[in-house]
Amino acid sequence: MSTVTADTALTPAAATNSRDRMQRAARRRRYATNVGAAVVSAILLVWTLTPIYNIVMVSFEAEGDVFSDHLWPPNASANSFWIVLTQGYWYLEYFWHQFGNSVYIASMVTLLVLTIGSLTSFSVMRMRIRNGWVITNAALLTYVIPASFLAIPFYLIMQHYGLHNNPWSVIAALVTFATPYAIFIFQEYGRSIPLELDESARIDGASPLQIYFRIYLPLMVPALVAVGTFALLAAWNEYLYQFLLLSNKRSMTVPVALAQFLNSDVAPWNYMMATAIIYALPPIATYYAFRNRMSSGLTMGGVKG
Amino acid sequence: MTTASAIEFGGPAVRRQSVWRYWRGGLRGSEFAWALAFLVPYIGVFLAFVVYPVFYGLWMGSSPSLYTEVFSDPIYQQTLVNTVLFVAFGVNLKLFFALLLSGFFMRPGWWVKALLMIFVLPWAVPALPSFISIHWMLNGEWGLLNNALFILFGIDGPSWLNSRWLALGSAICSHVWKWLPFWTVILLAGRMSIPQEIYDAAKVDGATGLRRFAHVSFPLLANLYLVLTLLATIFLLGDFNSVTFVTGGGPANSTHLLATLGIRNAFDLANPRLGVAVVMSALPLLIPLVIILMRRIKNTETQL
Image (cartoon, rainbow over all chains, first blue to last red; front, side, top):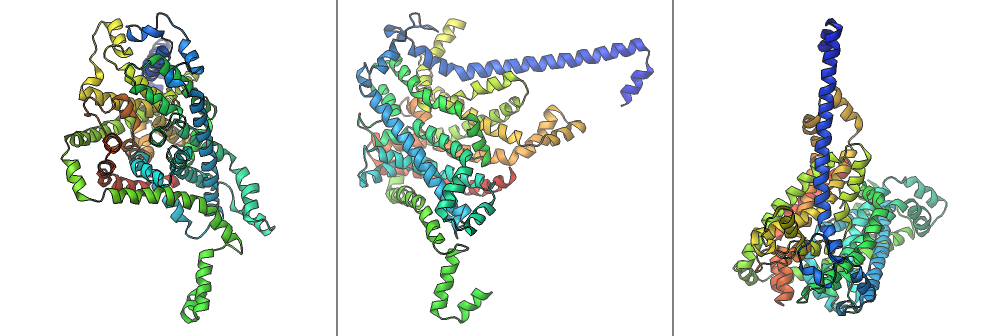
């Protein structure tokens, strides 16, 4: 305030002078922050894209070029992709079958997570079953146990159940670890739907099953989409349980097959990276298509990962 | 009041009825049966695939002699050091940079949004391809990193995966690379949930830049940041993929984490009990974390 009065007291020439100086300082500051932002952006781009560039680069390398010094393959060719798509290498002889296994497992997991999660949260939050908090806490506890810590006993009990090399063993594992997240998100999202809706339907004589199908599920669609995307990606991307539980070439999924490459003495890196790209494209597309729904799912429950 | 007196003065028939009414709560007739039926699938999954394996694991790792065997294993001792370093650096680097970057991504402008789209790519790409790619990228002779160092700067880079500390550092960096976008997006959402009026008020009071962060943003984000730290610690303790694919536990089994060493003992050495014992040795750290986190998550829900 005082500077303004001081300025007006000065001669007009001095006033424009100081205003000029202030404008110039502001411009310089803006320039400096912009340069800073540009530097941060450049670092972020290099950091983020280098490993991904490496996948793409290696997948375009020709047969003998993998073991040479270069930043872009001298004889770039898309031959590796053709080899993968036509299953033209002995590690890839069941590629499409394995791709189908991955699709089957991911879709079953999504379906089951959505069904079990929504039924549970409907019973606990909408029907307010007595002591429902026990279920909520059991789910919370499952959510914070690292899945890899349970892998060894899980593998052994799957042998008890006689499910070794059966896709349903993997489906069971993935449903077990994804449903708690679903229950949280559904419970959190369900708070925004007034209970009076259920209440009035109940007075009109609707059965719980009708309320579930006609009122609850239609209103929960945003949460169902968010959780469905999460479950689909989690199941498609998971490795450890699929590796432990599926060891047969015909029952294994794409990530397990991909990791098998590493066991061979001379790993054909170009085929491997081409396989990796084909494996990664569906989840990337799903991710970007449902990105906003997913991040609203993250914020819905506060911090739920 | 009425139920209490019924229990005191009523016969066994009345008591049974009031217990029944207690369990039914406000549900009428067949509704209680429906509510229970809706819970059956999850209870089934929980009993068959959580309770049974947990108790089976506890039973497998219940013999004390296993632990003398585990603790005297030099690989296990190295693994313990690795796990502590992995948690200390991994969690803090990840969350610290996520906090800074979430502030960066609050900047206006289309190109910041475009950059965010690219920045979340590591999270969108499945773990396996990226980690395998990083593994090959760090190859001392043919990897992209050393090629780039040589072609651009004329430096002969080290063989990243042949020394314990470089390999462990690479694994930590890979983990940070993969999960940084995830935590940044969560913290970004946390920042966005701070009402603009608070910033406007701070602006009137003359708080900008670092002072605004220290006195306005951070206090509001502190609880979230703490919960995320705990959650990140637990997730990181269970991380199997980054070490398995970036270093493979090598060189000479010197970069294992508890999770990967457990799997190695159980399957490569075909000794599941020894593997369970390795994992169980993380419980003294894990259980307090889980208890604090479970309490904190409930508070955060109401705050955010």
